[in-house]
Each structure stands twice: as structure tokens, then as C-alpha cells.
Length: 88
Image (tube, rainbow, N blue to C red; front, side, top):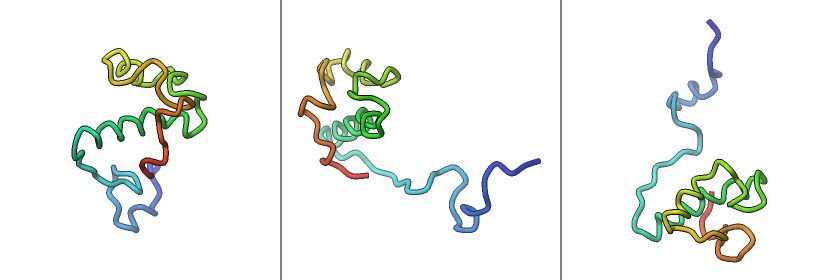
């Protein structure tokens, strides 16, 4: 049977499930939660998969917009989102 992953992670003592550069983060408050939600919603734009957040059809943005967390034109080119507010 073929191996599903290379020997490299095993040699470094890395776990079999977690990805490299993974770290756990405990959300501190509502503002921290909002920043992380914004980061997730903007990823398709950041990586060139969509021009605007609302253009990514698989986004959870639509659900959150219906719930009132985002307005209909949030994200991308309207100046309400600062991608430099947090790093990767």
C-alpha cells in the first residue's frame, strides 16, 4: 500500500493531522472575533479567487450578512476593511 504522506513531517516530529505553520488562538473578545471573521471572509479576495468578498459563491459571508454581521457591500474595494489589520 502506498504512503499517503512523505517522510519529511515525520522526521521533524510533526503531528500527522496538523498542518505546518498552524497555531492555536483563543479569541479574546468581540473585536478579536470580528477581526478573525473578516480575515476568513476576505481570503478568496486576498488569494485572487474573487474580485470582491460577495463574489465568492461558497462564502459564509452571505449567511453572516443575512444575520446582520455584515452589510451587503462589505469588504474588498469599499474601504471598510483593512487587510493589514492582522497578519498571516
